[in-house]
Figure 1 (spheres, rainbow, N blue to C red):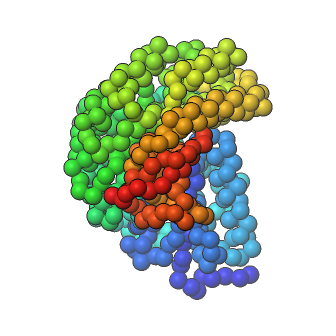
Figure 2 (figure 1 turned 135 degrees about the horizontal axis):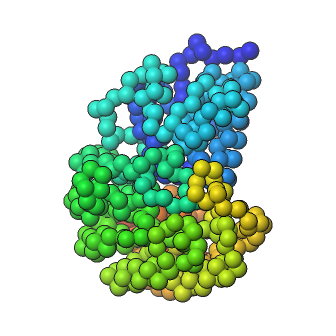
Figure 3 (figure 1 turned 45 degrees about the horizontal axis):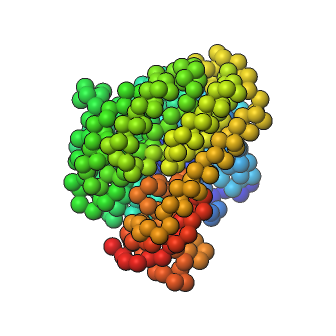
Length: 439
C-alpha cells in the first residue's frame, strides 16, 4: 500500500454548502497555517495527504452531495493515496453517530463549533489572538462576514437550529476589527451573513443593533459596499432600512427569504407572518428606498400546498416583481415540525412548480434588464472569463445574482476595481456594456 506519511502534511479543505460554511473553512485554514501546516482550498492537485470535508446538511440534495464527496475521498483513502480524512460542518454535526457506522474510513467527525478539537488532530493549538482573521477563498476584493451564528426562529421546515444551535451574535468591536483587517488587505465589499440578520445584538446587548453595526462598518476606510443577506420578514425592524438609506456604503440590496405568499402555507411553515403583512412590509421598504433590489427565495411543494396556494404564490411574484428570486423544492427533514406532516407533493410536481415559478421570474428579470439599456451603472469587476470582463452592480451579490459582461477586445477593466459601464444590451440574467470611465 502506498503511503505518504513520511512527508510533511499537506491539507486540502473542501467546502460544501453556503457562504457561512465558507467562512468557517477560511477560519480553519488560517488557524492551520498559523500552526505551520500547509493547506489549500479545493486543490485540483492530488498532492495532499489529508482532506477535510466541510459539509452541508440543509436539504436532501445538499446532504447527498456531502455524502458522495465523503465517499469519494474515502475511496481514495482506501486505495492508499490519502493518509487521513476528517469531516466537519452541518452534516457531521447532525448525523455524526449514524455516519460513523456507515463510513468507517473517516478518521474523525467534528461538529460546527469544534474547530479546537479538529486542530488537536494536527497537534495544533487554537490561536485566540487570530480572532477575526482568516484565509480568504474569495477574490481578494470581497469577503463574507458572519455577524452571528445559529437561529432562534422556529420555521417548521428548517433544520438549521439543530445543526447550528441558537442565535449568538459577535460583539460589534470584534466585527469592526475583523472588517478593518479585511479592508487593510484590499477588501472593498463585505457581505454580511447570518441565519437571521435582524436578531443581531439581541442576545448580548438586549436589543437589536444591526443599524449601529452598519454605521460602524460605514466608517471603515477602504470598504465601499456593504451588503445584507438573510433577513427574516416577521416583525422586521424598519430602522434597518432607514440606516440603509442614510449610509452611503450600504448597498440598496436586501436578501429577505419570504418562502411563500399563501397565508395558509406561511402559517403551516410557522413563519409568523401572512400575505397582507408581507405586502405592507414590502410597500414600506420600497417607499423608503424606491430603487432597492430585493432578493428573495421561495419554496414550493411544502406539505399540503394546493394548486390554489401555488397559484397565489405565482400571482404574488408577478405582482411584486422582485429584482432577484430563487426557488427550491421542499425537503422532508427529520426532527423538524414539518416532518410530522405528510410529504404529499409528488417530487415531479415539486420540480414542475419550481420551473414554472422560475419561468415567471425569468420574464420579470428580462423586462427589468431591458429597462437598464442606455443607463450608466457602477460596476465592480470580479474576474475575466473567456472574452469578457465580468462584474456586478450594487444590485447583485456574487454567484447568485445577475452579472455585467464587458467585451475584453474593446475594454479594459482592473479586477477588483469599480468602473462606470454604459449598458448596451441585456438578456434575462446578464447585462452587456462598455466602460466609459474607471473609478
